[in-house]
Image (tube, rainbow, N blue to C red; front, side, top):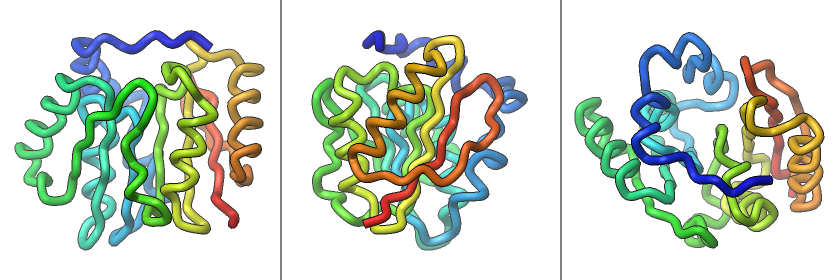
Amino acid sequence: MAQHVCPWWLGYFLASPIRRAIHNPEKILTPYVNSGMVALDVGSAMGFFTIPLARLTAPGGRVIAVDLQEKMIASLRRRADQAGLTSQIETRLCSETMLGIEDLAGQVDFALIFAVLHEMPDIPATLASVYRALKPGGILLVAEPTGHVTKPQFQETIHTAEECGFTVTASPSIRRSHAQVLVKTT
């Protein structure tokens, strides 16, 4: 798949309230996220899903938001501050080759990779890193945009996730997306 990184300025459109009509974060996340959980948002951008994740994990939970672009992370920090959620959200700048989550091994209850996996230069390494971060029984929700990723490409990605150790459990219906729920079974 192509490794094209979304320009930082597009993050404003991705975080737009208008997008909620297509991808309502609470509706998408509520079946999988509860208070007290540790959640990981890979490719968080400006926090379209991060802010709702922080609300859903409250009280007692936290969200680790990882992105490649400092401008995206800076905007997310501002949005978290405005929402009064800075104490619940930890932001991390990753590199093109590492997510920088090695210290989270076995600590994450829920991970989200929404419309970003196709931008990763090493999809198997990304999935393996998320797998290690999840607790046994931890959930990964992967969604990719149908306009960027074909169904065969998405199926290949899910096969790669299974090779990492994930088990497919559900195929949620998310508009304009291929989506799969996976669980760390070991």
